[in-house]
Amino acid sequence: MATADDIFDQSFNNLERLGLRAIPFTASPTNQSSETLQQVFTGREKDLRQVFNQFTSRERRRILVSGRIGIGKSAFLLEVLGVLDRKLPDLLTTYISLPNELDLATTALIAVAKALPNDDWAQQQLYRMGIPTSKVLKARSAEVSGSMGIGGKLGEQDLPITAPEYPAISLDTLLERAREKYPRGVVIAIDDLDKQNPSRVRQLMHDAQGTLKGQAWYLLTGHPLGMTADMLTSERGLFDLQLPLEELDPPTTYQMLINYLNSVRINNDCADPADPRAVLPFTPETARRLCEESRGKPRLFNRLGNAVLAKAADLRAKTITPDVLELGLQASARTRIQEAALGFQEERLRQMLQERGSLSDEDITLDELRQLGFSSFSEVMPLLEKLENFDLAYQLPQEDATTFEALVLPPLEDEASEA
Ligand SMILES: Nc1ncnc2c1ncn2[C@@H]1O[C@H](COP(=O)(O)OP(=O)(O)O)[C@@H](O)[C@H]1O
Ligand SMILES: [Mg+2]
Image (cartoon, rainbow, N blue to C red; front, top):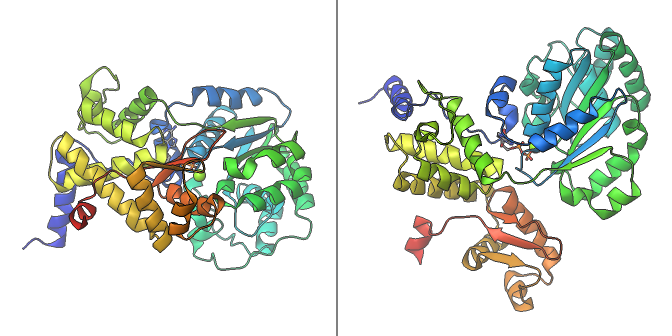
């Protein structure tokens, strides 16, 4: 009988057999240290250049990074902040995940106050809001601690936050104080506006115009749906730079795979895409297939990579052959379906999408909509978006029609046996 210690050793041996110290793929960049992110972050050169160009000016700017979920907005933001930290020590960078109930000014106030642990006035502001301040949160990844937002690390996330009466004024005062130590100013990165519903985002932006035009640099992330037409026109001038992030192209995705593997590979740091050793334990063929399947979407890429390596370790493989890859991809599809915990209609919709390959407002019939229990395509949209959030579908980037494509690899074993 194997003891728990034996089993633990076996898990690591199985990874070592693949030549790896760990599985490098993570669903969220906030699980990574900034050094790891720096190691694996790939591409986006044009976008980085545009952002850094803004920082050559002393005038503070407002930048909106937009893109669909999983495209790499958070990673981009964190990478930008990491570079700014290294290059501009007289600039203070702060990062916060937008909490559910708060306005942008209060959110910004919290982000800056947390970044000034030695400023008594700042700590007092946090204290008044009911945010624990006894411990200084060190790592940026700990500061944000996923969707919990504030204070999650200290286990007191249930404490209600009392927003100050005039957060914009407190924020101004705080920014003044920060200037003493950081003459170049303060960058406030507010992430996860993409997780909020579009109407709330619009309201937040509208209410925060004064704040956004204030003394700090702002970096915000949003979902294109929350940012459409009326907001970008009525709030015109709110952003100095709008940066829509898109899918990575195949060579960049391939390089990204090399970077991730290099961050954990034992005894081999070949990074030359022309050299097959660069993608070990993948073969160039299975490496290319993984990149294709991930469609240049970093989160899907991470999910698939994770599942494939876990499966390969499980099978005690030394190399990721096409068979191993296939089993890994299927395991990932099953996990994604389980995680989505689809309701009846959602599951019907997923299967329909799977059978047809794609669904759009132009090719779905009224009958088909009725069969699904709907009367219009707009009612189906939230369900399709949920499927997209779990990487079970994805929306094609086109202006004239709304089209979602299926993202599960047929045939799943259990579905095949049912049929
Ligand atoms: N350019 C990139 N290079 C390497 N990894 C990336 C890149 N962009 C995103 N990732 C990784 O992909 C995953 C999903 O990206 P994320 O930034 O969370 O997407 P979003 O914020 O748009 O939902 C994260 O693990 C992230 O670290
Ligand atoms: Mg994000």
